[in-house]
Image (cartoon, rainbow, N blue to C red; front, side, top):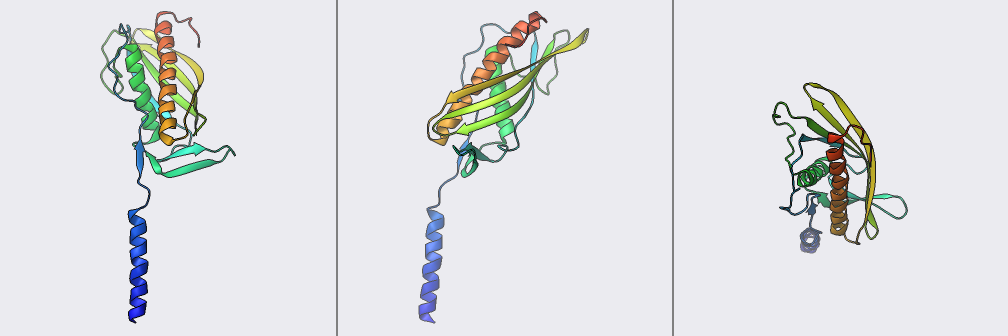
Length: 202
């Protein structure tokens, strides 16, 4: 009996030790460190960011990476700090605010007599390949509305790719950079399109 108890205690001690040394969980965000730089002049329109659509394959609490074989791997201890769709939404909204020099008025009252441009974003691909690249393929749509005018819209697409290092945090930073690049494209188009309805996609 004593020998059996000793063996059981040894097993429990081993399990407890394994639990103590298990890999810690890391949390990541697509929103970069705060940046005080803003556009030199605010636009003549008000801006609002609509919810973002994300591919179901990567819409997980865990970070999902693509392997060279084409398979996907879910990294159990590498997680997003919020749902990926919210992370992408907040990161893009933040970058748009910086480039437009105006705040995202999503869900807030709008000033009368000033046009509102809404941004709707459908992320078709969100690829994370450690040691190679981060890639996004996005269909985005601008919609302009004003009480006295007919609503008009412009739909475009952008595919952006950024080299990434071999660590998960390297891929996250690369995604932050491609989202910043996307915001630059969209903000520039929005400014021109707001002034000239004939402006097309970049």
